[in-house]
Length: 304
Image 1 (cartoon, helix red, strand yellow):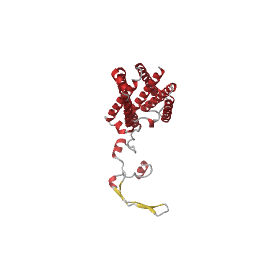
Image 2 (image 1 turned 120 degrees about the vertical axis):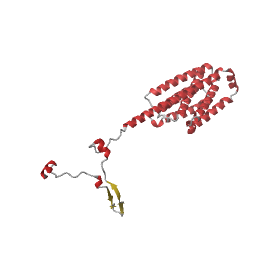
Image 3 (image 1 turned 30 degrees about the vertical axis):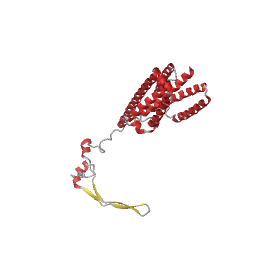
Image 4 (image 1 turned 90 degrees about the vertical axis):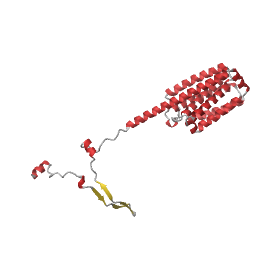
């Protein structure tokens, strides 16, 4: 009998009895202390009770001989969802920005046309020069408020109210400026601005050149152009005015590409506009296009 059991068990005698957790229950741990380093520091682990490690029932029922339970969840699935969510948010942000910009431009063109073709308003603007300076001061105040106050441009509907006031004030200022030019020159400037803005927007969307890291260079170019404007005011030369208009058109064309790529999300992620700042993004594009219009209007008027 013993030989049979030994031979069936590989020569190691009878097998041990099966493990039963009820036979062991809980074991008490009396704790221990040991010395750390060469000093008089001792670490003492407190006594307590611990449960014997048993095999979970759901593992035995589900996997048979598996030792480590179920596999961890797939990590890359969460990353794919996150990337899709970010892309969807960015597309919604772009739609908001360009819809707001389109409404601003339509309102501005309508106000300019009123100043051009309403004779009574045109003559009143000629006779009251204070209106142009008042509209200019109101525009500057609203630009500073929208640029510096985060709550003003993020809280709905306060941001839309402030942006609407700014658009109307900008339209009144541009209309007051347009009355000093021929209607044909103003329309040529509007058409040239629309064509240049559309071409630059397509270039910013399709180009592999990234302008989002050129913020410092554009800022230096801006202050250089400002210094050149002071020189033009002192010398009062028509050729310098034409050169200034050309350089200003180039500067704000670069700014339009720069701001467009910031909205779309360029390679320099730290410069891209947050999805919450759709009002501020629309304001930047609107100011770029308006500046292009003023410079092109000046250039056309000087060349005529």
